[in-house]
Amino acid sequence: MRRSWGGWQQGDLPPATDAAAWFAGRLPDGWFTGAPEVVVDREEILVVGELPPLEGEFDDDAARAAAESGRISRFREQTRDERIEIARQAEHRYRRKVAWGARLGGTRELFTTLSVPVMTRLKQPERKVLDTLVAAGVARSRSDALAWAVRLVGEHADTWLTELREAMAKVDDLRAQGPDLS
Image (cartoon, rainbow, N blue to C red):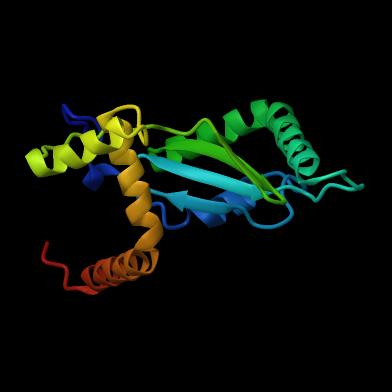
């Protein structure tokens, strides 16, 4: 693999199509109630697992949410050293950072996730949209406003984005099946 001035290029990254299977085999038994959700992009692999359910009664939803958050916090602390070692191995294998999270009931918490800067050039109409979001108090900055807009589009265009990702995967499969020209 070559290293360029801008860091690892996408063509330099090893495929991570087997990441879910690798984590399923590598994670200790008993951490999660089933196979964890493993989401991969160019910079990061996110591993989120479901913790065993809480026992006992709770006075209200707020008390249950507090107990769920506390259990997730305990999981985070108790598994820290082992998660670091697993992440180190995965980062070596896939050349991507590993982030972790846990779900319990209605609570989902992520820890050690990346925030990756993205450069873009916007014309005045797009800047005005971001500035309106900032002026209205929806976002603290243009950066926050852009992240908010991307999340909103992602939520409302999920079906379309899923179909687009599936089509891109099909193109990758067809490309891999093509003739070897070397």
